[in-house]
Length: 103
Figure 1: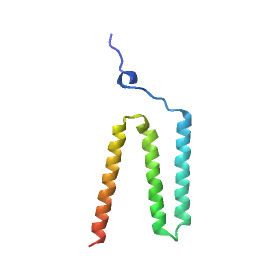
Figure 2: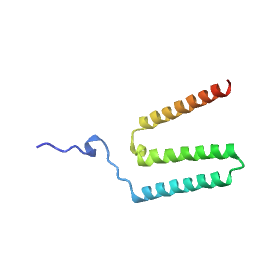
Figure 3: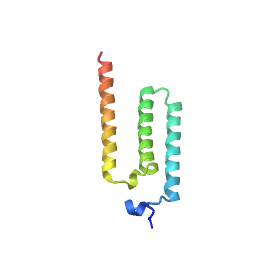
Figure 4: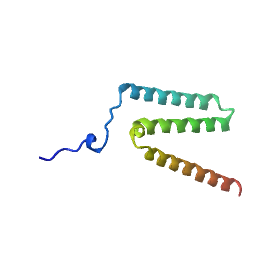
């Protein structure tokens, strides 16, 4: 008989607890609330509020990738590859902005 392929043959399976899901949800909701509060009350500091919103958005992306995309349970090489892509994206964005502002 043919055996069904499951997670145990490919590697270790993981089961996320409700606590992980709820803590991730609460974290994302709190970060969203902080972003909204900063955008409403930080109108006087436009550059600082944009930088803060981008920082909070980056943290939210990390939380989503770590828990919802199961990066927490994958091999470390995947984490390093994603980090490499993020660093390259930031470098090219900064270089493009510098070239644009120096025209």
